[in-house]
Image (cartoon, rainbow, N blue to C red):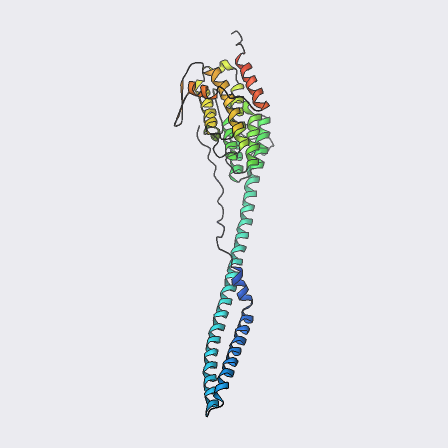
Length: 344
């Protein structure tokens, strides 16, 4: 089955500018105070120097002249340093204020872009919902409804998508491919709550995953549910077994490739699982399937994996279900396999 393609609406890139540091802002706000402190410190230093110089200079001839010359030299040097300091502080203050203004403008532009994006998403969502019915109020064509569901997914309106999809499932107005692909998109989101809602819907409407002679499943189920939540990994084998139970067991005889695909997918789930409880339940389900469909050893080829049924059967032979739901599912599967085909 081809992988579902989910196209997201173009998102305006957010600014990556780093905010002005608190230290720089503090310096800019207290520039004049810092200049005053520096000026006071310089005059204190000059006063101390003059005092020390005067102690040894006034008792000699020309000492006062030396003091005045030294004082003027020191004062000139201090004023030069002070002017440079004031210039640097003023420049820094202007730079910080300019930076703050630029960051504010960027934030404003980002807010406007987000608002425009939200309005565009809302408009697209409204138009997508309108595709579910024509102008006369009658249900639209299935292809329009499928397109609307994928559009809502691309807009990340997942909760609305789930609500509308369930309405279509109740009325049996959605095809199995759209059902599986739309929920695969939602299962691939990082939101575990949405993942749980999606797998619960799959479990409740597993019979609608059948498609003529074949079936459809979310692609993540067929590849081991890597990275999905524990809830999804726990329920994925149950969903696949419910798909099998949706047909009579003799109807699967001419669909061995479908049974092989489901068995291989559950084997992949079992091999990859690290949670002991989920692994035991998955192993118990897999053991029941192998006993029903593979009384003789065969090799299952799945993507780049090869599974020898007799080896897998021996590995899961001692697996016992740890939950009541799994026990009931296995009992139902075993009873289903014993059903007799009615006479032609």
